View (cartoon, one colour):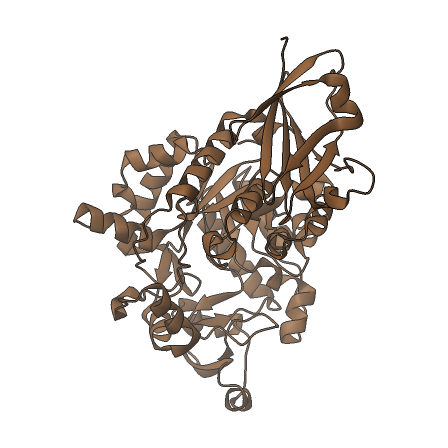
Length: 494
C-alpha cells in the first residue's frame, strides 16, 4: 500500500442493480465481471469501499418508505420514476452485520474480496457504531444496551423516542442522533456508558473485521466521551483506543477511516484512526478563498497524511453539481494532488450530478460528461503513473509577488513533490476568478548549473528554464482564472 493511496466509494446496491439490468439477469458480488475489476485496477485504485452491504430489516425499511420529508422527497428527486421497492432502507440502519442476501451473502463478498486482492486492491466496509436499526436482535435480548427514555420523553419528543417490544416487556428507547439534529427515526441509540455494550461492540467489530481489510466508521466522533455526554448526559469510557487495538492485534495492518466533523480529526487520529474525513478542506474549496485553502496545508504531515480528502461522497452533493467548470478542475487538482488518502466516489469521474440517498437500491442512468470524464481519466493516469505522488516527499510552496505591488500571488496554491531519483513535480493552481502571477522558489536540490524542461502532465505546455532562476527569483507563473499546471521537471540539454 503506498503512502498516499486512492479509494473509490461504490454504492453497492444501486451498482449491482445497474449491472443486473445491463446483463438481463441478477448480478451478485460474485458475478461482477473480471473486466470491471480490471478497470478499477487500471484506474489506480488501492481501496474499494463497498457502501451498504449489511442486512437491513423491514422495520427500518418501512420508516424509510413512510418518511415524507426529507427522505422520501430526496428519493423522488433523485429517481423521478421511484417505486416502493426502490427504497431498500438506509445502509446505516443495520439490523445485523450479515452480508445482505440480495448481494450474494458472505460467500459472494469473500469471492469479491479475493478477486480484488489478486489485483492489489483492498476492501473497505462500513461499521456503524453509534446506533442499530430497528430490527437488531439486541432490542429484544439486550434492551439495556440502548439509551432509555420515558413515557414523558416520548410524549414530549416523539421524533426522538420509540416504543420497543423487548423480552422483558415494552421499553421507551431513544433514536440515534448527534447533538445538533433530531433523531434518525429508523435507528436506536446505543449506550456507550454501559460497559457491557462496549464489550459487545468490540466483539462485533472483531467479527466484522474478518470480512475486509478496513472499515469506514460512521460518525465516529459521536462516541467520544465529551460528545456523548453533550448528547445524552452520561460520560462513557473511551471506546476507540481499546477497540482499534484489539482488532489490530488479531489483524495486523487493519485500516480504520473515521467520518468525523467539528475539528475532531486530530483527536480521533490519536485514538488510532488511520484516516479522518477532511471536511474542512472541502468547505474551503467550496468557499473559494485561496488564502484559507493555502493555510490549511500549513499543518504537519503527521496530521495531513491521515486525512481523507474528497470533492464528494454519499453525504455531500455531487462535485459536478457543486463546482462550476473550471473551478471543479482546480478543486480536484488541489484535493487529489495533496498528501493524504485520495477519496473518490463512483460516478464522480464521469460527471454524475445526482446525489443518491443511501435509502435507495436503484439509481438513475446518467450519461457521462465527456469533458469531465476526459479530465479525470488524465488525472487518474497521472496519479497512477508517477510514484512521487503516491510515495514521495511533499512540501507546500509559498507564492511570492511576481513584481512589487502585484497582489495576485495570494490567489495561488502550490505544492512540490519529489520521488526517487530525479522525479520532481510542481503543482500550481490559480484558485481565483481573475488572471494571476507569482514566483515559486523551488526547493529541489541540484537545480543550479542545469537546464530543466518543465512538462505539464495535465496539459500540453512545456518550458525550458535555467536551474539558478528556479531557485531565485523562482519559477514565474502566469495563469488565468481557475487554471493550473502539473509540471514534471527533467534535466535537459539543448
